[in-house]
Length: 504
Image (cartoon, rainbow, N blue to C red; front, side, top):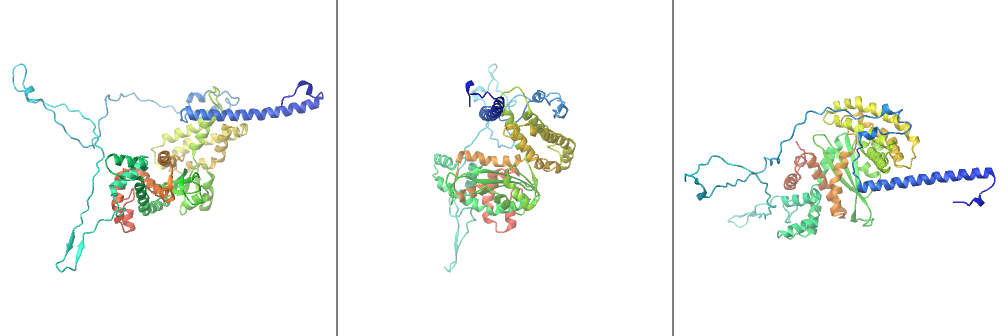
């Protein structure tokens, strides 16, 4: 509030009190202005700037704060790399894959052109010039006619008909190949069913999207035994990553159509038989991880969401954190500063974490034992220095600022973030789970919502199979076609186990 000069008190002590109050008010206003400016800068950066979390190594040398000189020796430096002599790649287009079938088209001269224009002699063939083009034939659609022979005895009392092989969806038009195609188109290629309906109609096949949706629900229910065995494999290994994302279900008891439900992602299993599983749940409470982790023991790696803590405590798990989330918060803090030339603590924190990622990059192809040793030699000393910098810096930064929030996250998650040092099999971050959940997020942008709980549960199962097939090096369509053909015939646990991705 602005006061006129004639309203100011004449008493010195009263003026001092007024000045103190005004100084406090100014500080509060300045803090709000800074916070709002950071929010505006971050929104602009997310809308217009590059999404990369990298900063130039030159920026690390631009620190001009008071403590910069004292901490110069602690700042992580870029590793120097000797660049070998440059070898130029051969020019021209890349050759087409040898595995593709070839159709040879022979071109010859017309008969009248096979004579020399100079002396009239017949030309002799001396060689050939070969070039290749890539051709695509549209999808082949055919009708499979099942003709079942009938047999009878002359006595008239015995009539037999050849049995029809077990089908994925009995008494329907859906063959294993068609089911696999629709599944992959929707869950791998993010092609909604209404678009698939239009594509099929364009080639003369009328299959309403309601029919396609019903097939997807039945296919998701069909593969439940496979999902159950994959969960056993997942929980049987001692390292597991988790993440979750939202999904909208229109028809769900006790919830409005606009409310959010969740799809939970678990990624783990033995290195040579990895598993990716999606699980639907209407909520995001701590009860969900407790249910999904029942029977698991070992290390759970997640982001900073506190909903996992109860499961960690209940089952005595080791809780590893995600350094990528810490890096992202420092990156956002840098972006929140706008186009300031001055660099500060947000740049410092980001530089520290990038140095840790450079160490991880060097050890990417190492064995777990060699990676563990590499981390002890290079990452652990760096983390010790980072912790010292964190303890010294945290009290100096306003907790409501973007940099303050980044520092707070790093501080509160510290014990989880450094767990990766203890096991060479662990990753520095939870990006494996985030990457596995991305196909669902991309698909959600196209089909927007699920109509029913049955539908979203079926989608979770089918996403699980596709993503698990991919991480096991299988082509999703070929795997699903095989699975939909053989699974209806499988009548033992052993027969179903043989159908799992990565089965030996």
